[in-house]
Every structure is written in structure tokens, then in C-alpha cells.
Length: 275
Image (tube, rainbow, N blue to C red):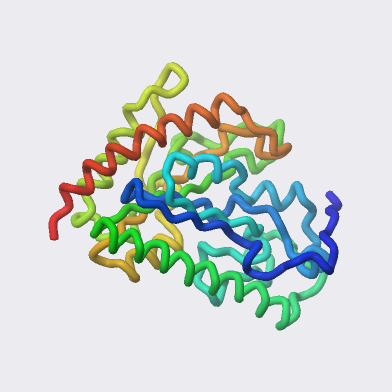
């Protein structure tokens, strides 16, 4: 599918690539690393993928869920411009192997384009570090909810969905942390997500089945080893048509309510983490 590109005169520096709001209401923050769909003009002009193809691999609507807390980190740029959940040296996809076999570019990105994309990477991590340091100073310990989503109909819009035995509705990724240290927080998260009322039923929630957590959560645990707990929460895209991009608004809102109820449970659990 074709795509339209912004004007080359449009501002395309780091000030438009992400939004970080830091509050003092709670030791819980929320992040939507892959919600963004925007591209800089030069990146758009070089890109072979169309809007719909990009959207299918992005995590649309996850920014809505960050609204359950005051401290929010939302990325506006597409992961196809720079992927903030990968190590810096792999943050710009260069080959199909970097991007699930997709041919992203018309031609290999120029060094100057890569440099500009990585400037956004550096700026985001610098600002995220400042925001989370503020939380550490304010609360002592903090929790980051790292929201993502994943496809389960990769064989096409009319094909059967993937086997749910290996594709949980909610995957909680915890491999990047000291699981024993943060056990009160993780167990509280799993307990709430599994028991909360959800559209007349409960959610299928499993730990480290489909995904175990990415670079961002690893960076938090490396940077704030005694103070920060990052939990990667990945929702199967049952809340939308992953081929058309159309959301099920009621489903999205039901997820938001579950997450809103999760926050006070995590705040209580955080007090049980030992030194």
C-alpha cells in the first residue's frame, strides 16, 4: 500500500519523536514504545513498506493504556524509523532479517539518515533516564509498565488465528529482572490481571510464553538495579483487526479498566520489596 510523506520542510528533530510526562502521583509509570506511526520525510521517501504494512507490526492504541498513570512515555515515531526496544546498534532495521523478513527500504539507509534516527534514540533514553531518576528520588523504588501488542493472524485476514496454546491473550515478560527481588510486584501483577473482571470473563495471562521482555526493560534494570522494576505486558491483538487496523473500542476500554485497577495493586506490592 502506498504512503504519503510529510513535507521535507517539516520539523523532524527529536522534539517531535516522543512525549514524556513526569508526575508525582504514583511510583508507577507506563510506556508505549511502539505506538508511533510517524516518519521523518527523508525516511518516508526511502521506505518501501506502505502504511498498512508498517501498522501491522506497530503497536497501535497502546498509548491509550498509558493514561492510567501520570508518568507516561509515548513514542510517536514508527519502529521502522528507529526501534527503541532494541540495542542501539540494531535500532535501525537494515535488512529483512532485522524486520521479520520484510523488505523495509527502497535502498539501504544512508549513514546520515541512520545518524539522525539514532539521535532520536539517544534523546529518548536520556530523557527517560531523567524521568525515571526523578521517580527514584521521589519514591525510592518505582515500577514501569512497558505496553506492547502482538499479531496472531499472520496467515491473512481470513485465516484461522494462531494456536492460543502458545499465544496467550496477555503475556507478561519478566526475564530481564531479578525475579526473586521483585516477586511481590510480579505476583501482584499476575494475580490482578488473571482475576480482574473483563467483558464477562477473565483474561488468559501467562508469563514468558511468547515474549520475555526487550531492551528497554533490560536497560531499566541495568540502570536502576535496586530501584526500578520494568514489566513488559504484551497483549495479543484480539482487540483489533490487525490487517485493517480497525480497533474494537469496547475491548480496548475493557483492557484500560483492568490496567487502571492494576496500578493500586502494584503500589501496595512495591512496599513489600526488600532492600
